[in-house]
Amino acid sequence: DQQVKQNSPSLSVQEGRISILNCDYTNSMFDYFLWYKKYPAEGPTFLISISSIKDKNEDGRFTVFLNKSAKHLSLHIVPSQPGDSAVYFCAASSYSGAGSYQLTFGKGTKLSVIP
Amino acid sequence: DGGITQSPKYLFRKEGQNVTLSCEQNLNHDAMYWYRQDPGQGLRLIYYSQIVNDFQKGDIAEGYSVSREKKESFPLTVTSAQKNPTAFYLCASSISGTGDSPLHFGNGTRLTVT
Image (cartoon, rainbow over all chains, first blue to last red; front, side, top):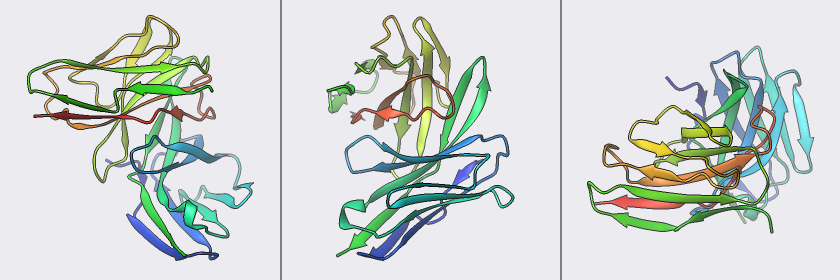
């Protein structure tokens, strides 16, 4: 049972426009949500996060929105640049006991920014 | 430069052989993790360790083993009991292992077992 879902495997956007990547989750115990960016044959790199007590977090061109009632979050990239072309993973953190937390990842969305 | 080093980048093994993937970090992070990525799939947690000499199973630990004898090292052994070992393996670390502590990933090891 997938607890973190990214329903769009791919997304194409024109350079300069907004990219919106979506993520849905089912576990109401998730307390932090994170976005990672991954280039081929490399490890993911952390992009931005949001606490479950907030509804928005912004860092430069990247903004994450959280709608707890809908169990939905989205990553907005404005303006999109060709270098943003990568796979974006949504991840959610939950307490797993004995002082440990686990991250659950979605399957990723491949973003292509067209020059 | 601080970071996580995974070696080798590509690894080929015959079926039935155990193989150990190396992961070293010089970030002085307490927590370390091993994930597996398959095509079209998200990252799935194999094992994690919050402190030296302690580790816990993740969601798909069967057929794998780990050790954490030093803070900076967290090797993963893929045993012959792992039914589908061919995959991209990612090692990660975080400062504290808490929910708001982002993971820092290595560049992965692609294991092919034939």
